[in-house]
Each structure stands twice: as C-alpha cells, then as structure tokens.
Length: 223
Image 1 (cartoon, rainbow, N blue to C red):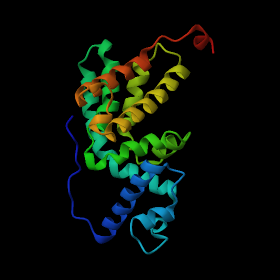
Image 2: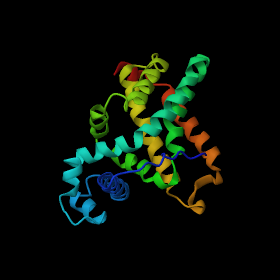
Image 3: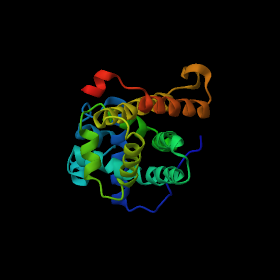
Image 4: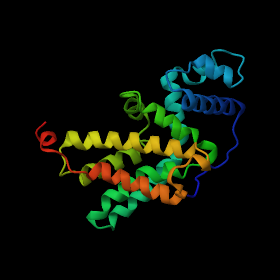
C-alpha cells in the first residue's frame, strides 16, 4: 500500500504548539480511549507547563476532537474524492465496491507516522452519536467527501430499506476501523492469515461489500 503524507509547511511557534498538542491527544485517545483521557493529561504528556494549554488552543474536549479531524481530513478527502470519480464511467454493478474502496483505501494508505488517527477513529466510533456531531460541526468543504460517499451509498442501496441501509453503513465503519487499526498496529508475526498488505486490503474491501450487500430477512423488511 502506498502511503499518503502531508506536505511540510513553516509553522509559527503557536501553530507548532497547537499541532503538538492535538497529535499528543490523538495518540493518547488512540491508546486509552476518548473518555479515559483528560485535557490535563494531554497537556502534561505534551510537556506544557500551563495546565490550561488545551483550553487555550481548543476550548474544550469536543473542540480538540474537531481539531484532530480538521488536521487529518483534508488529505483523506482528496484521495476519497479521487476514488469516487471512478463512479462516473463504471457500470452500476461495480459501484458498491468502488464506494467501499473509497471509504477504506485512504485510511489504509495513511502515513505510518499518522497511524494513531485510525485507532483514534476506532475509539471514537464506540461513543454513540459523537462522530456524527463532530462531522456536522466541520466546515462544509471538510465534510465534502463524507457527504458524497453517503449520497453514493444511498443510491447504491436504494433497494434496501432506509433503516437497514443506515445500520449497515454504521456496521461497515465500525468493522473497517477495527480491522485497519488492528492491522496497522500489529507486528508482522501478529498479522493473521499471512496476507500481504495488498491482499489484506482487498479482503477488507470484499468483506465491506458483503456487509452492505447481504440479503436482509423478512422480519427486517417488516420492522
């Protein structure tokens, strides 16, 4: 898998301090869970003497979570939108796999130095409604790839009851993040099945398509 890296830029001292804080928070949240880490712990781990440094830069924990998204999402957005462009010329029977790949591949290609973000997301989705609230608060352009992905999924799953389609989207996201976080943070000896990175990614995409396209029961249709 190729890795996506963010372009280097010249940052002010304030910007470097802010970035260091949010990247420290991302790592701690990834390792211990969102609710298990306090803002004071983030400040201390980042080496700040001022215990209110996080509040100064981000205001609150939700502000800090939103800042992590704003820091990481632009690069993922560009790759995801690029993959979704394939829908234009592809036959309808290929659309679901293209969409699932657009959801998964940008995260799988993330630079090794940024892999805590994937585990951070895996921790975040365990908190009901939190991810949706944060995404809703992002500026429109940052949420563009997510909006287009959801619209494409809605079209591809129009034969599935709306509640079922939404539930499967939630299941897909949880599955993908758990699978990728486990893979990205395991050693070669711990990786299951002896699959190469490319084969593992293909298999996760296949499984994701399976989650979305599985038959639904009569009870589900009625309920």
